[in-house]
Length: 105
Image (cartoon, rainbow, N blue to C red; front, side, top):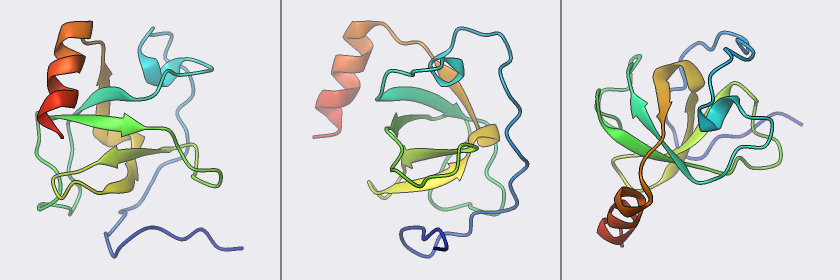
């Protein structure tokens, strides 16, 4: 069965999984703790739904999501798949996570 993506977002070309970089960020762990936050560092051709330098919530992937994509809550408040290389996971203090969660309600 062909993978379906929510909406009509252009996914861009994805390079295969880059493997572990040895960092202790949430995305490199065998069993990451979702949700976590990641900074957007690239947009590809997607100039509307993401902003460079902004932290986005990364949620648990769905069953058939490719390993080299993150499921991200974007500017429209929807979750979409974006290439992992567009993001740098960041560790936030619990107080910051709580504030971001409250702001998104």
